Image (tube, rainbow, N blue to C red; front, side, top):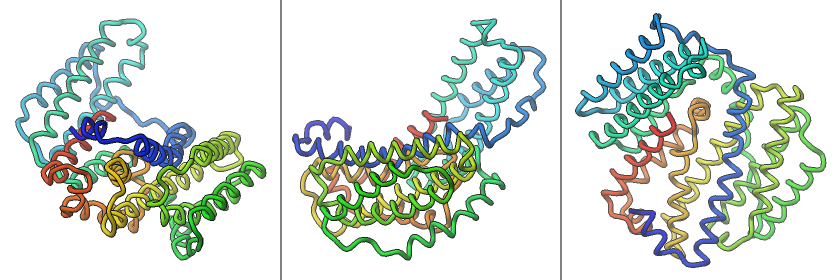
Length: 363
């Protein structure tokens, strides 16, 4: 519904503005992707054979029975959705690892096809359940937190606690006092210098994150003015630096856990800063165009979409509070609905439902 309307409303300038907004977000999201590439370095596999299957058919029959259970559920709520989603993940992982253990997937196409069919059917049932309860933005976040594979991961929580003072200290550093041209020039200078000097150890990584944080917050102070600004070079240079950090972790120059945790926390921090900056802009001034409003909506809801299972487990109490602010702002503001040209029901009920559906598709 919103997508079709957006396509009709975009002008040429609006398309450029929204593309720029998405590209700026891409440079925030790259470290999330990098995290998943280095996860195997730090995590060991757990035992997935708790159900003690006796044969591939036995395992698939158990999965089929779980599907039947899901089909029988008529309605759900946040607590039950979390419980059932965690049961699904455990069942799916257990069956999958059992079948992979003896290379059943390679030897028997029927088993592989049946597993895929059951898995897709279970996912369909969870998509159906998203429509049986009026889930809120808070429900979406709670479900993501409670169903994260890293929920209650003590080692990760310790690593986040160790990194937290570094990010808290950044909040006390003031942003650059200058116009958007000054900010963009300083941003490009930092990226160029970092590319030349490189990232070869943890101190280099933290130095880059700290300096970049000041510039990103300075950039957000001028976000409203950034329509039609060419930003592709900033995006590309940032992605290149993030890849260099990954390479340094792979080569052992940076501890893999440090690279994962700090870069994930950096990304979460930026997504929430971006979201709250957009909320502030919408609350105090009119959008220049429908396309700009749509771009702002995209940036406001981006944390719900892009903060993945690992990253959500790295949320600090301050960032959780910031997320709560976004959650509180979205449904209560009639100005939001007017700005985004959608009715209040869509903003308060249908959008959270779509966000939950998108999350189900990642499970």
